[in-house]
Amino acid sequence: MNIQETLQTLESLSDEKVKKQHLKIGARENLFGVKMGDIRNLAKKIKTNHALALQLWETENIDARMLAILILNPKELSANELEQMVASEQFTWTADWFYNYVIKEYPDKEQFRERWMKSENVMLARAGWSLTSGRIARNPEGIDIPTMLARIESEIPTAAPEVQWTMNSSLVQIGIYHEQYRVQVIAIAEKLGIYRDYPVSKGCTSPFAPSWINAIVSKKK
Image (tube, rainbow, N blue to C red; front, side, top):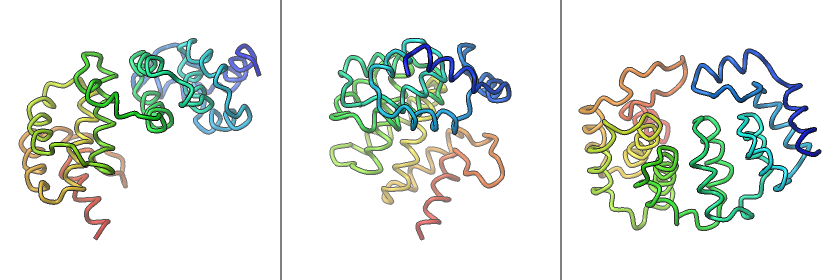
């Protein structure tokens, strides 16, 4: 499939309800509103096609970018290309897909983490904290946890909403995986109250750090 055929296919799969849902949570108008399952099925049909993925990304259409994420080859991206792609996508749903399917699979992703965490670009900072959250959970060696906690406590109250979300995730991961800091983490979260009143659907875990930590720790027991 070429770029025109792919876009036509995506448009034919549009669903007005999906479009309205995406717009409601911050998507821009440049989208068709394709169900996630339909995007995944189309990606399976196309398979890996890095050149097409880059063309789809350039359209800035949200559905095209979601498809691009699934068919590109992370190893073929230069560090500069990857950074530009992260900085260019403001819709957090797409940004999360990009993190999970591209950044996490990128060789030497650690080169970005600390630089992005200090970036004035909201989406780079958001991705930097996502990388930190992953490091804290899976490979914490070299991370100064007390310094990290102090930084989170200081910065999270005034952080942009997009960044606040992944900073909170880093705080939670410290509480879950580093028992010696759990009481301190919960005390910080209780004092700040970030996401205390966040609406949560029945059966879902609250992003409020104490609730999230206690839910996961209880399951581990």
